[in-house]
Image 1 (cartoon, helix red, strand yellow):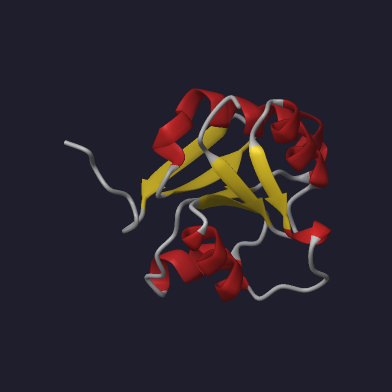
Image 2 (tube, one colour):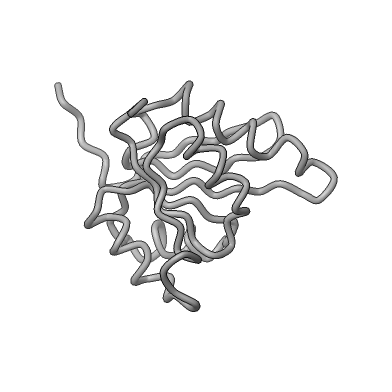
Length: 127
């Protein structure tokens, strides 16, 4: 196993991201593999309980994590327009490899050539 970082990919997450992270030996649970329809709040709670970073392309998770102050093990919100999708998987894997444990408890907006990382209330310092 490359890392102790684990992920939960919701239905909106491009499955190529799931395959790419799994190919890099990350533990990725894909919602589409175990349910047809999920509730956003339940998914974020499941991800937090299982200490999995949520992978999504659904902007609603920003509202849930920040405005509703729901604890999160971390969220990576993928914002890739159609004309940039060819670099999607490479960008996600590179971000995970480079940021590693810093992604735990963070809210990341990942766009072509840019990643904005914000801390959420879940993050804990080990100092």
